[in-house]
Image (cartoon, rainbow, N blue to C red; front, side):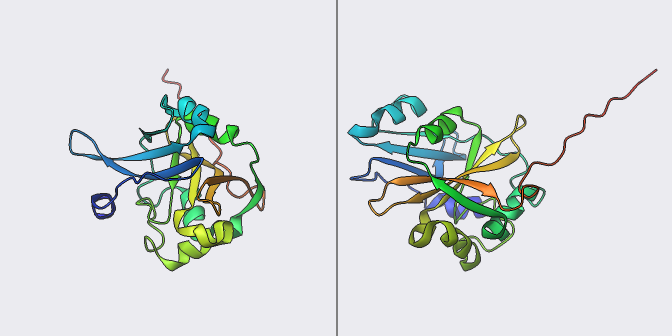
Length: 198
């Protein structure tokens, strides 16, 4: 239901006068299904970034991969992000060179979470509580903030890599983040179990 309500009214809009802008939302595929997608817009000074991410010079969109265990309450990382983001994580530095972000996005193993994320099963979608958490990182542009989360080899949420905010000119600014306590925000220990069937 959340997907339908959010996706029914989502349209990507072209950002004007912005050098490099990252947006996230939903697009309708030819099959009629909705899919989560990232839209990248570039101006003349950032065409190399768009070319690297998706092969176009000015703007493009690419589908985000299926996020396993994002829909529901089984991901400890998503629980932390949606309920106690500013307590668990801190902004480190603004990326002066956004090439690491471009490499991250061109890799394709990520999901972008925003204020209206359909993966938010913990607080009201678009609600004041999560907006206040995003405002701790992005200030007045909290309603456009994106959390860039990497996915592991089976597409489960693994790590919060970047917080993306809009600067005064409307461009995307990327910030490194780190857990306030090293043990928090880290992936769960994975132990391989072997069975001897003799």
